[in-house]
Length: 483
Image (cartoon, rainbow, N blue to C red; front, side, top):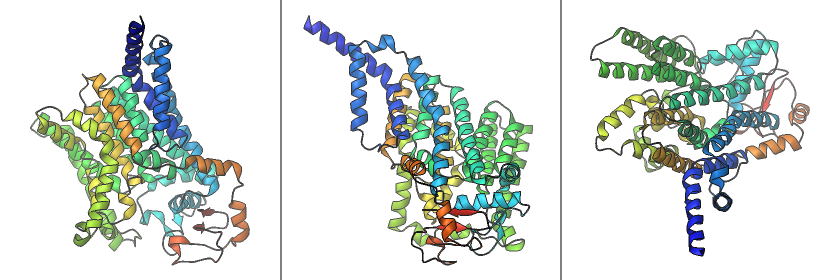
Protein backbone atom coordinates (compact mmCIF):
# COMPACT_ATOMS: atom_id res chain seq x y z
CA UNK A 1 0.00 0.00 0.00
CA UNK A 2 2.81 2.37 0.92
CA UNK A 3 4.47 1.51 -2.37
CA UNK A 4 1.35 2.36 -4.39
CA UNK A 5 0.96 5.66 -2.48
CA UNK A 6 4.60 6.52 -3.21
CA UNK A 7 4.21 5.70 -6.88
CA UNK A 8 1.04 7.81 -7.10
CA UNK A 9 2.77 10.72 -5.34
CA UNK A 10 5.72 10.49 -7.74
CA UNK A 11 3.38 10.41 -10.72
CA UNK A 12 1.64 13.55 -9.53
CA UNK A 13 5.01 15.19 -8.88
CA UNK A 14 6.18 14.36 -12.40
CA UNK A 15 2.92 15.67 -13.82
CA UNK A 16 3.31 18.96 -11.98
CA UNK A 17 6.95 19.17 -13.03
CA UNK A 18 6.19 18.66 -16.71
CA UNK A 19 3.08 20.79 -16.91
CA UNK A 20 3.70 23.55 -14.37
CA UNK A 21 7.43 24.24 -14.31
CA UNK A 22 7.16 25.89 -17.73
CA UNK A 23 4.88 28.54 -16.25
CA UNK A 24 5.85 28.57 -12.56
CA UNK A 25 9.57 29.19 -13.06
CA UNK A 26 9.17 32.17 -15.44
CA UNK A 27 6.74 33.73 -12.95
CA UNK A 28 9.23 33.29 -10.12
CA UNK A 29 12.06 34.76 -12.19
CA UNK A 30 9.98 37.78 -13.23
CA UNK A 31 9.10 38.37 -9.57
CA UNK A 32 12.78 38.06 -8.67
CA UNK A 33 13.58 40.66 -11.34
CA UNK A 34 10.95 43.10 -10.09
CA UNK A 35 12.23 42.66 -6.53
CA UNK A 36 15.83 43.14 -7.76
CA UNK A 37 17.17 39.82 -6.48
CA UNK A 38 20.52 38.47 -7.57
CA UNK A 39 19.69 35.95 -10.24
CA UNK A 40 22.94 34.09 -9.64
CA UNK A 41 21.71 33.06 -6.20
CA UNK A 42 19.27 30.43 -7.37
CA UNK A 43 18.96 28.55 -4.09
CA UNK A 44 15.91 30.53 -2.84
CA UNK A 45 14.20 30.28 -6.22
CA UNK A 46 14.88 26.58 -6.61
CA UNK A 47 13.77 25.95 -3.03
CA UNK A 48 10.55 27.83 -3.69
CA UNK A 49 10.05 25.81 -6.86
CA UNK A 50 10.57 22.59 -4.91
CA UNK A 51 8.00 23.69 -2.32
CA UNK A 52 5.50 24.48 -5.06
CA UNK A 53 6.07 21.10 -6.66
CA UNK A 54 5.76 19.34 -3.30
CA UNK A 55 2.51 21.10 -2.46
CA UNK A 56 1.26 20.41 -5.95
CA UNK A 57 1.85 16.71 -5.52
CA UNK A 58 0.42 16.63 -2.00
CA UNK A 59 -2.75 18.59 -2.69
CA UNK A 60 -3.24 17.40 -6.25
CA UNK A 61 -2.44 20.80 -7.72
CA UNK A 62 -2.95 19.75 -11.35
CA UNK A 63 -6.68 19.45 -10.68
CA UNK A 64 -6.92 22.90 -9.07
CA UNK A 65 -4.53 24.97 -11.17
CA UNK A 66 -4.64 24.87 -14.94
CA UNK A 67 -2.15 26.07 -17.49
CA UNK A 68 -4.67 28.76 -18.37
CA UNK A 69 -4.58 30.21 -14.85
CA UNK A 70 -0.78 30.17 -14.88
CA UNK A 71 -0.76 31.96 -18.23
CA UNK A 72 -2.92 34.66 -16.69
CA UNK A 73 -0.32 35.10 -13.98
CA UNK A 74 2.50 35.40 -16.53
CA UNK A 75 0.41 37.87 -18.53
CA UNK A 76 -0.15 39.99 -15.43
CA UNK A 77 3.58 40.01 -14.68
CA UNK A 78 4.38 40.93 -18.29
CA UNK A 79 1.90 43.81 -18.18
CA UNK A 80 3.62 45.05 -15.01
CA UNK A 81 6.92 45.49 -16.86
CA UNK A 82 6.16 48.90 -18.49
CA UNK A 83 4.62 50.13 -15.22
CA UNK A 84 7.72 48.95 -13.36
CA UNK A 85 9.94 50.86 -15.80
CA UNK A 86 7.83 53.99 -15.33
CA UNK A 87 8.09 53.86 -11.53
CA UNK A 88 11.85 53.21 -11.51
CA UNK A 89 12.63 55.86 -14.14
CA UNK A 90 10.64 58.51 -12.24
CA UNK A 91 12.48 57.49 -9.07
CA UNK A 92 15.82 57.85 -10.87
CA UNK A 93 14.82 61.34 -11.99
CA UNK A 94 14.10 62.31 -8.39
CA UNK A 95 17.39 60.99 -7.01
CA UNK A 96 19.33 62.48 -9.96
CA UNK A 97 20.59 59.22 -11.45
CA UNK A 98 19.64 59.59 -15.11
CA UNK A 99 22.93 60.92 -16.46
CA UNK A 100 24.20 63.52 -18.89
CA UNK A 101 22.61 62.13 -22.07
CA UNK A 102 19.17 62.35 -20.52
CA UNK A 103 20.07 65.91 -19.49
CA UNK A 104 20.99 66.73 -23.10
CA UNK A 105 17.69 65.45 -24.47
CA UNK A 106 15.52 67.09 -21.83
CA UNK A 107 17.38 70.38 -22.14
CA UNK A 108 16.86 70.36 -25.92
CA UNK A 109 13.15 69.63 -25.42
CA UNK A 110 12.84 72.50 -22.94
CA UNK A 111 14.65 74.95 -25.23
CA UNK A 112 12.49 73.99 -28.21
CA UNK A 113 9.36 74.71 -26.19
CA UNK A 114 10.84 78.18 -25.50
CA UNK A 115 11.35 78.81 -29.22
CA UNK A 116 15.13 78.34 -29.07
CA UNK A 117 15.31 75.20 -31.21
CA UNK A 118 16.90 71.93 -30.04
CA UNK A 119 19.74 73.83 -28.37
CA UNK A 120 21.96 72.31 -25.69
CA UNK A 121 25.04 73.49 -23.83
CA UNK A 122 25.98 70.07 -22.47
CA UNK A 123 27.87 68.73 -25.50
CA UNK A 124 31.49 69.75 -25.62
CA UNK A 125 31.88 73.57 -25.64
CA UNK A 126 29.20 76.21 -25.96
CA UNK A 127 25.66 76.12 -27.28
CA UNK A 128 24.78 74.05 -30.34
CA UNK A 129 21.84 72.36 -32.00
CA UNK A 130 21.42 68.74 -30.97
CA UNK A 131 20.76 67.76 -34.60
CA UNK A 132 24.41 68.41 -35.38
CA UNK A 133 25.35 65.71 -32.87
CA UNK A 134 22.71 63.07 -33.59
CA UNK A 135 19.88 62.97 -36.11
CA UNK A 136 16.97 63.14 -33.65
CA UNK A 137 14.15 65.24 -35.15
CA UNK A 138 11.66 63.20 -33.10
CA UNK A 139 12.44 65.57 -30.21
CA UNK A 140 10.22 68.15 -31.90
CA UNK A 141 7.19 66.14 -30.75
CA UNK A 142 8.01 66.12 -26.99
CA UNK A 143 9.06 69.76 -27.46
CA UNK A 144 5.57 70.62 -28.71
CA UNK A 145 4.00 68.69 -25.83
CA UNK A 146 6.26 70.54 -23.41
CA UNK A 147 4.68 73.82 -24.54
CA UNK A 148 1.45 72.57 -22.94
CA UNK A 149 2.88 70.57 -20.03
CA UNK A 150 6.24 71.83 -18.81
CA UNK A 151 7.85 68.58 -17.66
CA UNK A 152 10.47 67.51 -20.24
CA UNK A 153 11.95 64.73 -18.09
CA UNK A 154 8.59 63.11 -17.43
CA UNK A 155 7.56 63.44 -21.09
CA UNK A 156 10.70 61.64 -22.25
CA UNK A 157 10.14 58.86 -19.70
CA UNK A 158 6.53 58.45 -20.84
CA UNK A 159 7.74 58.17 -24.44
CA UNK A 160 10.23 55.54 -23.25
CA UNK A 161 7.52 53.50 -21.54
CA UNK A 162 5.26 53.80 -24.58
CA UNK A 163 8.07 52.56 -26.83
CA UNK A 164 8.78 49.56 -24.59
CA UNK A 165 5.08 48.67 -24.35
CA UNK A 166 4.62 48.94 -28.12
CA UNK A 167 7.71 46.81 -28.74
CA UNK A 168 6.37 44.04 -26.51
CA UNK A 169 2.97 44.19 -28.22
CA UNK A 170 4.51 43.88 -31.68
CA UNK A 171 6.77 41.06 -30.47
CA UNK A 172 3.71 39.25 -29.14
CA UNK A 173 1.83 39.70 -32.42
CA UNK A 174 4.78 38.45 -34.48
CA UNK A 175 5.33 35.34 -32.34
CA UNK A 176 1.60 34.57 -32.16
CA UNK A 177 1.44 34.34 -35.95
CA UNK A 178 3.08 30.93 -35.66
CA UNK A 179 3.01 29.78 -32.03
CA UNK A 180 0.45 29.31 -29.23
CA UNK A 181 0.00 31.67 -26.31
CA UNK A 182 2.38 29.78 -23.99
CA UNK A 183 5.29 30.13 -26.42
CA UNK A 184 4.55 33.82 -26.91
CA UNK A 185 4.48 34.51 -23.16
CA UNK A 186 7.67 32.53 -22.58
CA UNK A 187 9.29 34.40 -25.47
CA UNK A 188 8.32 37.78 -24.00
CA UNK A 189 9.63 36.66 -20.61
CA UNK A 190 12.94 35.75 -22.26
CA UNK A 191 13.11 39.14 -23.99
CA UNK A 192 12.45 41.04 -20.76
CA UNK A 193 15.07 39.04 -18.83
CA UNK A 194 17.80 39.35 -21.47
CA UNK A 195 20.72 41.16 -19.78
CA UNK A 196 20.78 44.17 -22.11
CA UNK A 197 17.00 44.62 -21.96
CA UNK A 198 16.36 44.15 -18.26
CA UNK A 199 19.27 46.39 -17.21
CA UNK A 200 19.48 49.19 -19.78
CA UNK A 201 15.73 49.85 -20.02
CA UNK A 202 15.75 50.72 -16.32
CA UNK A 203 18.93 52.77 -16.46
CA UNK A 204 18.64 54.75 -19.65
CA UNK A 205 16.18 56.64 -21.84
CA UNK A 206 17.57 56.46 -25.37
CA UNK A 207 16.63 57.30 -28.93
CA UNK A 208 17.30 53.85 -30.41
CA UNK A 209 14.83 52.34 -27.95
CA UNK A 210 12.24 54.85 -29.18
CA UNK A 211 12.82 53.50 -32.71
CA UNK A 212 12.46 49.82 -31.75
CA UNK A 213 8.62 49.54 -32.00
CA UNK A 214 8.70 51.04 -35.50
CA UNK A 215 11.27 48.45 -36.60
CA UNK A 216 9.18 45.61 -35.18
CA UNK A 217 6.02 47.18 -36.61
CA UNK A 218 7.65 47.25 -40.04
CA UNK A 219 8.53 43.56 -39.70
CA UNK A 220 4.96 42.72 -38.67
CA UNK A 221 3.47 44.78 -41.52
CA UNK A 222 5.77 43.03 -43.98
CA UNK A 223 4.53 39.65 -42.74
CA UNK A 224 1.01 40.88 -43.51
CA UNK A 225 2.11 41.86 -47.07
CA UNK A 226 1.66 45.56 -46.32
CA UNK A 227 4.82 46.87 -47.96
CA UNK A 228 3.79 50.53 -48.03
CA UNK A 229 3.02 50.55 -44.31
CA UNK A 230 6.30 48.76 -43.59
CA UNK A 231 8.27 51.38 -45.54
CA UNK A 232 6.41 54.19 -43.77
CA UNK A 233 7.23 52.75 -40.33
CA UNK A 234 10.89 52.37 -41.29
CA UNK A 235 10.95 55.98 -42.51
CA UNK A 236 9.58 57.10 -39.14
CA UNK A 237 12.21 55.02 -37.32
CA UNK A 238 14.93 56.97 -39.15
CA UNK A 239 13.81 60.11 -37.30
CA UNK A 240 15.22 58.80 -34.01
CA UNK A 241 18.91 58.30 -34.78
CA UNK A 242 21.22 58.17 -37.77
CA UNK A 243 22.03 54.49 -37.13
CA UNK A 244 18.43 53.64 -38.05
CA UNK A 245 19.31 54.63 -41.63
CA UNK A 246 21.61 51.61 -41.69
CA UNK A 247 18.99 49.40 -40.05
CA UNK A 248 16.42 50.46 -42.64
CA UNK A 249 18.88 49.84 -45.47
CA UNK A 250 19.54 46.35 -44.09
CA UNK A 251 15.79 45.76 -43.84
CA UNK A 252 15.38 46.75 -47.49
CA UNK A 253 18.16 44.37 -48.50
CA UNK A 254 16.43 41.59 -46.56
CA UNK A 255 13.15 42.18 -48.40
CA UNK A 256 14.83 42.38 -51.81
CA UNK A 257 16.75 39.12 -51.31
CA UNK A 258 13.67 37.35 -49.93
CA UNK A 259 11.53 38.50 -52.87
CA UNK A 260 14.16 37.42 -55.38
CA UNK A 261 14.44 33.97 -53.78
CA UNK A 262 10.69 33.51 -54.11
CA UNK A 263 10.37 34.95 -57.62
CA UNK A 264 13.71 35.34 -59.48
CA UNK A 265 12.72 38.63 -61.11
CA UNK A 266 12.35 42.21 -59.96
CA UNK A 267 8.75 42.86 -58.94
CA UNK A 268 7.00 46.21 -58.55
CA UNK A 269 7.22 46.22 -54.75
CA UNK A 270 10.90 45.29 -54.98
CA UNK A 271 11.54 48.52 -56.88
CA UNK A 272 10.03 50.50 -53.99
CA UNK A 273 12.32 48.71 -51.54
CA UNK A 274 15.36 49.30 -53.78
CA UNK A 275 14.63 53.03 -53.97
CA UNK A 276 14.00 53.33 -50.23
CA UNK A 277 17.15 51.33 -49.44
CA UNK A 278 19.22 53.62 -51.67
CA UNK A 279 17.73 56.72 -50.00
CA UNK A 280 18.46 55.48 -46.46
CA UNK A 281 22.00 54.39 -47.34
CA UNK A 282 22.74 57.74 -48.95
CA UNK A 283 21.18 59.58 -46.01
CA UNK A 284 23.48 57.81 -43.56
CA UNK A 285 26.64 58.73 -45.45
CA UNK A 286 25.39 62.27 -46.04
CA UNK A 287 24.71 62.86 -42.35
CA UNK A 288 27.78 61.13 -40.88
CA UNK A 289 30.49 61.94 -43.45
CA UNK A 290 29.59 64.60 -46.03
CA UNK A 291 27.44 67.18 -44.18
CA UNK A 292 29.68 67.46 -41.06
CA UNK A 293 32.62 68.46 -43.25
CA UNK A 294 30.83 70.85 -45.60
CA UNK A 295 27.58 72.14 -44.06
CA UNK A 296 27.91 72.06 -40.28
CA UNK A 297 30.51 71.21 -37.67
CA UNK A 298 29.47 68.02 -35.90
CA UNK A 299 30.66 67.10 -32.42
CA UNK A 300 30.06 63.42 -33.21
CA UNK A 301 32.73 61.57 -35.17
CA UNK A 302 31.86 58.08 -36.34
CA UNK A 303 35.41 57.52 -37.61
CA UNK A 304 36.85 58.20 -34.17
CA UNK A 305 34.90 55.25 -32.76
CA UNK A 306 36.38 52.71 -35.17
CA UNK A 307 39.23 50.71 -33.68
CA UNK A 308 42.59 50.69 -35.41
CA UNK A 309 43.89 47.43 -36.97
CA UNK A 310 46.31 47.03 -34.08
CA UNK A 311 43.51 47.36 -31.54
CA UNK A 312 41.24 44.98 -33.44
CA UNK A 313 43.69 42.11 -33.06
CA UNK A 314 44.97 42.90 -29.58
CA UNK A 315 44.34 40.29 -26.88
CA UNK A 316 42.45 42.69 -24.61
CA UNK A 317 40.22 43.87 -27.46
CA UNK A 318 39.38 40.31 -28.53
CA UNK A 319 38.65 39.37 -24.91
CA UNK A 320 36.25 42.28 -24.45
CA UNK A 321 34.40 41.57 -27.70
CA UNK A 322 34.24 37.86 -26.84
CA UNK A 323 32.70 38.80 -23.50
CA UNK A 324 30.08 40.90 -25.30
CA UNK A 325 29.24 38.02 -27.66
CA UNK A 326 28.98 35.47 -24.84
CA UNK A 327 26.88 37.64 -22.52
CA UNK A 328 24.61 38.84 -25.32
CA UNK A 329 23.95 35.64 -27.27
CA UNK A 330 24.29 32.83 -24.70
CA UNK A 331 20.55 32.88 -23.85
CA UNK A 332 19.76 32.21 -27.51
CA UNK A 333 21.92 29.08 -27.79
CA UNK A 334 19.13 26.57 -26.91
CA UNK A 335 16.85 28.16 -29.52
CA UNK A 336 19.57 28.13 -32.18
CA UNK A 337 20.33 24.48 -31.46
CA UNK A 338 16.62 23.72 -31.83
CA UNK A 339 16.52 25.63 -35.12
CA UNK A 340 19.61 23.95 -36.61
CA UNK A 341 18.90 20.43 -35.33
CA UNK A 342 18.09 19.08 -38.81
CA UNK A 343 20.67 17.82 -41.23
CA UNK A 344 19.86 20.55 -43.75
CA UNK A 345 21.41 23.27 -41.63
CA UNK A 346 22.67 25.46 -44.48
CA UNK A 347 19.22 26.66 -45.62
CA UNK A 348 18.30 27.39 -42.00
CA UNK A 349 21.50 29.40 -41.45
CA UNK A 350 20.95 31.25 -44.73
CA UNK A 351 17.37 32.15 -43.82
CA UNK A 352 18.41 33.38 -40.39
CA UNK A 353 21.21 35.54 -41.82
CA UNK A 354 18.78 37.09 -44.31
CA UNK A 355 16.24 37.79 -41.55
CA UNK A 356 19.00 39.31 -39.39
CA UNK A 357 20.23 41.70 -42.10
CA UNK A 358 18.57 44.78 -40.50
CA UNK A 359 20.66 44.52 -37.32
CA UNK A 360 23.87 43.04 -38.78
CA UNK A 361 25.25 46.59 -39.38
CA UNK A 362 24.71 47.37 -35.68
CA UNK A 363 26.42 44.15 -34.59
CA UNK A 364 29.32 44.84 -36.97
CA UNK A 365 29.64 48.41 -35.65
CA UNK A 366 29.79 47.08 -32.08
CA UNK A 367 32.50 44.55 -32.98
CA UNK A 368 34.81 47.08 -34.68
CA UNK A 369 34.14 49.94 -32.26
CA UNK A 370 36.65 51.20 -29.70
CA UNK A 371 33.92 53.08 -27.83
CA UNK A 372 33.57 51.07 -24.63
CA UNK A 373 29.83 51.58 -23.95
CA UNK A 374 29.04 50.09 -27.36
CA UNK A 375 30.43 46.68 -26.45
CA UNK A 376 29.13 46.72 -22.90
CA UNK A 377 26.64 43.80 -22.99
CA UNK A 378 24.39 45.59 -20.50
CA UNK A 379 24.24 48.91 -22.39
CA UNK A 380 21.43 50.17 -24.61
CA UNK A 381 23.50 49.67 -27.79
CA UNK A 382 22.74 45.94 -27.56
CA UNK A 383 18.99 46.31 -27.01
CA UNK A 384 17.85 46.71 -30.62
CA UNK A 385 20.00 43.86 -32.06
CA UNK A 386 19.20 41.29 -29.37
CA UNK A 387 15.50 42.25 -29.12
CA UNK A 388 15.00 42.01 -32.88
CA UNK A 389 17.04 38.80 -33.24
CA UNK A 390 15.13 37.06 -30.45
CA UNK A 391 11.78 37.91 -32.05
CA UNK A 392 13.00 36.76 -35.48
CA UNK A 393 14.37 33.47 -34.13
CA UNK A 394 11.13 32.73 -32.28
CA UNK A 395 9.11 33.60 -35.38
CA UNK A 396 11.10 31.17 -37.55
CA UNK A 397 11.22 28.20 -35.18
CA UNK A 398 9.33 25.02 -36.02
CA UNK A 399 5.74 25.44 -34.86
CA UNK A 400 5.02 21.72 -34.66
CA UNK A 401 7.00 20.89 -31.51
CA UNK A 402 5.62 23.23 -28.87
CA UNK A 403 6.40 21.04 -25.86
CA UNK A 404 10.10 20.82 -26.62
CA UNK A 405 10.23 24.47 -27.59
CA UNK A 406 8.65 25.51 -24.30
CA UNK A 407 11.29 23.54 -22.38
CA UNK A 408 14.08 25.14 -24.40
CA UNK A 409 12.59 28.58 -23.80
CA UNK A 410 12.60 27.89 -20.06
CA UNK A 411 16.28 26.93 -20.35
CA UNK A 412 17.01 30.12 -22.30
CA UNK A 413 15.28 32.17 -19.58
CA UNK A 414 17.49 30.52 -16.96
CA UNK A 415 20.63 31.25 -19.02
CA UNK A 416 19.55 34.88 -19.43
CA UNK A 417 19.17 35.23 -15.67
CA UNK A 418 22.63 33.78 -15.04
CA UNK A 419 24.23 36.57 -17.09
CA UNK A 420 24.45 40.11 -15.82
CA UNK A 421 24.08 41.84 -12.50
CA UNK A 422 21.48 43.52 -10.35
CA UNK A 423 19.72 46.62 -11.62
CA UNK A 424 19.73 48.27 -8.16
CA UNK A 425 16.33 49.64 -9.15
CA UNK A 426 14.81 49.01 -5.73
CA UNK A 427 17.68 50.95 -4.17
CA UNK A 428 16.87 53.98 -6.35
CA UNK A 429 13.18 53.60 -5.53
CA UNK A 430 13.92 53.43 -1.82
CA UNK A 431 16.08 56.57 -2.02
CA UNK A 432 13.36 58.39 -3.93
CA UNK A 433 10.83 57.53 -1.21
CA UNK A 434 12.96 58.00 1.91
CA UNK A 435 15.14 61.00 1.08
CA UNK A 436 14.19 64.47 -0.16
CA UNK A 437 14.97 65.41 -3.71
CA UNK A 438 18.49 66.89 -4.01
CA UNK A 439 17.27 69.53 -6.45
CA UNK A 440 16.78 72.07 -3.67
CA UNK A 441 20.18 71.30 -2.14
CA UNK A 442 21.96 71.73 -5.48
CA UNK A 443 20.06 74.94 -6.25
CA UNK A 444 21.31 76.41 -3.00
CA UNK A 445 24.94 75.47 -3.70
CA UNK A 446 25.32 76.37 -7.37
CA UNK A 447 24.65 79.84 -8.80
CA UNK A 448 21.72 79.79 -11.20
CA UNK A 449 23.69 81.38 -14.03
CA UNK A 450 26.64 78.99 -13.95
CA UNK A 451 27.26 75.80 -15.88
CA UNK A 452 28.95 73.10 -13.83
CA UNK A 453 30.64 70.06 -15.32
CA UNK A 454 32.50 67.54 -13.20
CA UNK A 455 33.54 63.91 -13.49
CA UNK A 456 34.32 63.18 -17.18
CA UNK A 457 33.53 66.81 -18.11
CA UNK A 458 36.32 68.25 -15.95
CA UNK A 459 37.96 69.75 -19.04
CA UNK A 460 35.19 72.37 -19.21
CA UNK A 461 34.64 73.37 -15.62
CA UNK A 462 35.25 71.93 -12.18
CA UNK A 463 33.99 72.58 -8.68
CA UNK A 464 35.58 72.20 -5.28
CA UNK A 465 32.36 71.01 -3.68
CA UNK A 466 32.84 67.29 -3.05
CA UNK A 467 29.12 66.77 -2.58
CA UNK A 468 28.56 67.41 -6.28
CA UNK A 469 29.23 64.54 -8.63
CA UNK A 470 28.49 65.00 -12.31
CA UNK A 471 26.40 68.14 -11.99
CA UNK A 472 24.95 69.60 -15.15
CA UNK A 473 23.21 72.95 -15.18
CA UNK A 474 22.20 75.17 -18.06
CA UNK A 475 19.50 77.80 -18.47
CA UNK A 476 18.34 79.61 -15.39
CA UNK A 477 15.60 77.17 -14.50
CA UNK A 478 16.87 73.85 -15.84
CA UNK A 479 19.15 71.69 -13.75
CA UNK A 480 20.50 68.19 -14.33
CA UNK A 481 22.81 66.23 -12.12
CA UNK A 482 23.93 62.76 -11.23
CA UNK A 483 24.92 61.41 -7.83
